[in-house]
Amino acid sequence: MSRPVLQVIAASTRPGRKGLAVARWIQRQAESHGGFDVELVDLAEVGLPVFDEPNHPRLQQYTQQHTRDWSATVARADAFVFVTPEYNHSLPGSLKNALDFLSVEWADKAAGIVSYGGVSAGLRAATALKPVLAALRTVPVVEAVSIPFFAQFLDEDDEFVPNAELEVGAKAMLGEIERLTGALRTLRAA
Image (cartoon, rainbow, N blue to C red; front, side):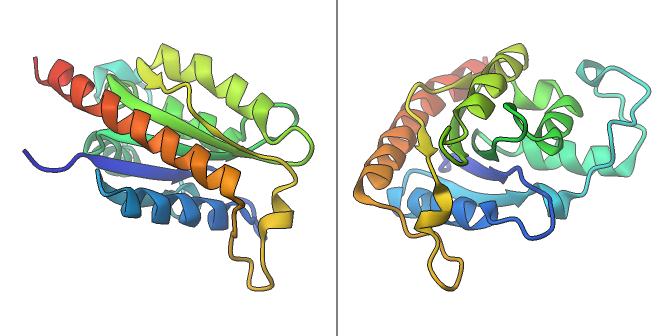
């Protein structure tokens, strides 16, 4: 059996964003973990418009090429890590919109959440994301990475340089995603 595909989804799409550095760090952590084939999925590059399909996503009767392309991307994943900032005490609209485009493709897959922000460490975004994932039958792991005042971890080249605690948290989250992914893969195959 091939290694599971883990997609690291960078949620911020705004110009000047710094969250892509956090997503690249998680990508490197996941690659060094060794349990996954890792893909970085940048929602700014995906470029979805505001949800524009006439049919409910659970039917998978997509009329737009961008939706078919997004469906194929998400369908090939076995697990996800959502890297999200906190906007106005919630998740960014770009992430909610990307989730809303699909239904079946998200189901029965494990997910980790890496949130970042100021004093809140993006925890309100993570809290808002969990019921959305549950509605899509995506299984968020308890282990997570919450990064307070994340700009302190950016070097002069805007590379993310974590402390030891963040690295330990990432390893724990990835280990739990790997553990659940095997069981959920079996469930999806049934």
